[in-house]
Image 1 (cartoon, rainbow, N blue to C red):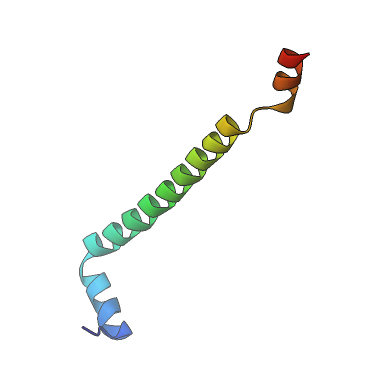
Image 2: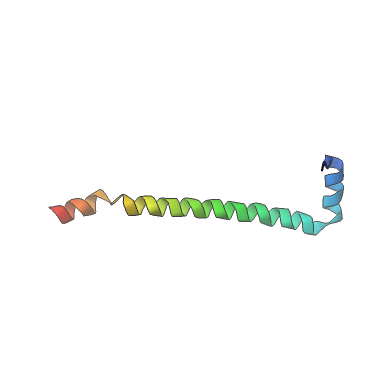
Length: 59
């Protein structure tokens, strides 16, 4: 299915809900990417102990 830009613009102006749906989808995608980054940092911190705490406990 091929929608030409002019048709797409006409559809978008005809239905504001479509534009809202597109905006919420991009927003949700950004939130998911941020969430993945947060989880990745937490995992790195968990499996990479802080040098100061390990040195203090071993000394």
